[in-house]
Length: 452
Image 1 (cartoon, rainbow, N blue to C red):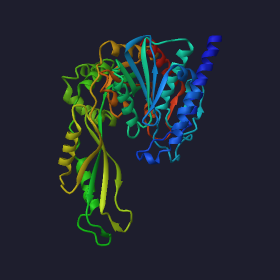
Image 2 (image 1 turned 90 degrees about the horizontal axis):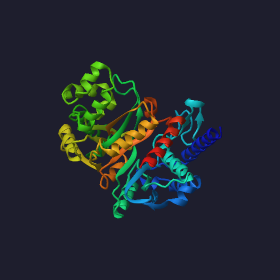
Image 3 (image 1 turned 30 degrees about the horizontal axis):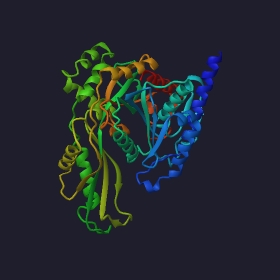
Image 4 (image 1 turned 30 degrees about the vertical axis):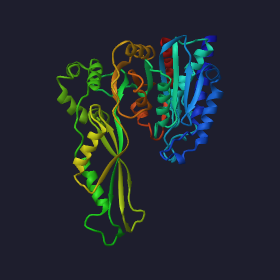
């Protein structure tokens, strides 16, 4: 009874800590002059108050202004590991449509249906809090790891990612080449693969590249009452339509084939026959994935989405400069240069200037076999016994990409169960998570640290 009471108290305290951190609106802005850095200072000082043992036992360095690097010294040198998260969040300036305000940390329901709401619950303060809760609890129990463990917490993952780059560079300068790096990414998900009823824990062994590609048209302005045959905005619109009509070529990279085989082995008999022979049925599977969902379509090709449009500031003035930003996510096996070539060929207009900003190549592929992969698999199944563990290519970008220069075992996995409805709240309204899965995440990190 005393143990159960202590566990309930610990769980309640962990939830309270998460809610406290959600209430600090650490919104990163692409234009960093618009970022309110006082909230980041408040977040750092709050961590010191909530996790006193972490701050008294581990060393901590602040890099690039607000990125945090903790070092937990182990009993033996070498074989270091890095646990990553980030504490900046995307904006939630317009609270219209939110069931609960984004920076309140509201809790609703009870028991297994208890939910915590707010920006950062899933992305990525939930994981950061779970890591710190696990470390604080282990320190309370007198635990010392066998080898050094670093905690890397970036402050601008949602924008520039310079914090994580600085953290990786610092480890390189120290001569640290981690045997394992674990960042956010995949999760425990259900009903995303045909015929598979068991939950699937997808672990990112790589991630797609990224580039924001600007399409710019400049020409003489004038009064809107006398437009030329082809205005700057019309030329830009034509370019975007042409790009939309020419999707990037599709393929099944090796990690995706391995994912299909692994998960497909648990599908219905007919589908299992096809999925476990993914290499043989490559072409029909490419066709299937292209139609099945937006997620599966993104698994097989580079994607391009128009995210920003800018033109005239006046309703009755012709635009002298029309600009579109196309966010591209570059498939494994492709490159930034190949992406630009495809866009230029699709647009077919020399008067549309096409340039890439913030380019990042696809990440190297980490092994999905061997002792470290098995360690991750065993830790996941210890917490989620029914889960099928599978490699996959992460569709978004993460801070982990900066660590591939210092480690060949970089993985992306957030140890939370996420329904399709909950995944849809990432970067959207009503971001939330079940409290029970947050507590499971703490158990995951604690188990992983003990096994490292």
